[in-house]
Length: 173
Ligand SMILES: [Zn+2]
Image 1 (cartoon, rainbow, N blue to C red):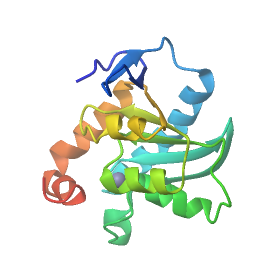
Image 2: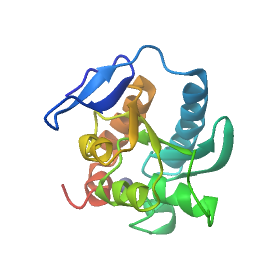
Image 3: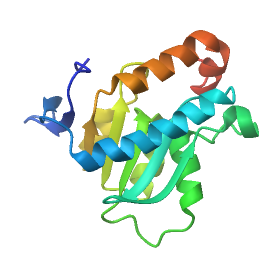
């Protein structure tokens, strides 16, 4: 497990080994976009939903934002990333875009990222759910983990308050 204190980029280090490398302070644009994603996550928690928020951006321009809607819409596949991509509507290409997500993507969202060839993913935290960032990075996606404590605390609060909904959201794990 990588430390949560500072941003990391997942990178291949010979022989297919993927490691989280410290990359120094996050870029201002990444912090700003993660703030917007976190706002989405908190809005979801406020309505009793899963607090995962996402933003699709081109540089500092937000194309769309969204949050998990399992509870709000009764939609099991409306993870934060999927809701965001849905809100973005049809995109001829995702070239040059970054997907921000407060939580490390699950297999389903990882699949969507790879299918649409989203080149860059910035993750708020990979502590409360690890996902498989090594796989994503191994497929050529630039993966940055901010290790944002605010993202951790919103998820922890949710996991403690609604453990059964959280288990449901990740397939009964
Ligand atoms: Zn997901």
